[in-house]
Length: 405
Ligand code: GLV
Ligand code: MN
Ligand code: MN
Image (cartoon, rainbow, N blue to C red):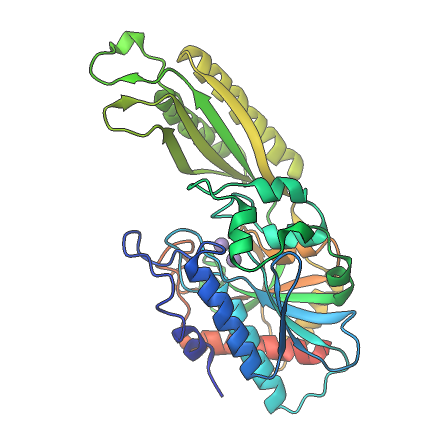
């Protein structure tokens, strides 16, 4: 039987990013498409029947009864942030495949069907909206707007998905898929230091922090870097720099808040050109959704003042938002009982990251398992999981699935 690490080793060359380091596996790029093919082959090799649904979600079915309704679903995603680590997403997919092997080895006879699912564009790295596949499935996005989302090369989501063989005329809320998800359990690499500090290999997820993304477009006057006197400029980059600092100040003044500008794009983007526009993306998170809303309002207010002073204009657009999620209490208790066999006293941990399990919580009971990351770093090539911990995670997942089947 394969270990989780040996499954992951087989994709360790896919989507490596020589310039950023780590992996860049944007949804429906060559790298992510290869991973989708790899997943289909791995699932087929295990006798699972693979299908792609209307929203591009891959499903690998272990049909235990003649119905797929109310099935037990596990899985994660294969897309990455730019220059990301090897585990955020793929660990959950590889662990699910190994958990199927373990269940079979244990001779488990399921009372309901089991599916391993792979959700597209969880990171929102290519088209801007995180958890795009699960949001489409649950019907919280307008399919027309999704079809017209563009990546940084101007390629629409519709064209990218079509090139991956998806008929984009059927995107949107999927009642069949919703009926099929009885419970969803996602295993994920831990993205902070919780399990290092607790000295434990696995934990049960308790909550997912509310978060959102906003694009702030600052327009000024594009001009020549050499001929325009400093006093004559309306430079949106100067305004953007102050907004970045304002976001930090606003978040620092609020307990538990996080605000990040991880992406900023000057237009046209020339060394000797004063930009005519700068787009910057704000990621703001807080456990109370009203506080998240007030944080973004404050940052926007400061941006307006900064822009007025710099002779620029700012327009704020919300790209996505998710409230704080409390994972299903009964399912957490089931996980706790299952983990007593191999991991007695397994801790419970909140996560500051976003996950499809959070989005799917509106249509079914969902839960998460986290696996220790000895660097405590994620969304970076330094994200890591020890081989033994990866196998511990698969054992924990198999224990949970066995009890839920
Ligand atoms: C995804 O990992 C996110 O938290 O944005
Ligand atoms: Mn993830
Ligand atoms: Mn991530």
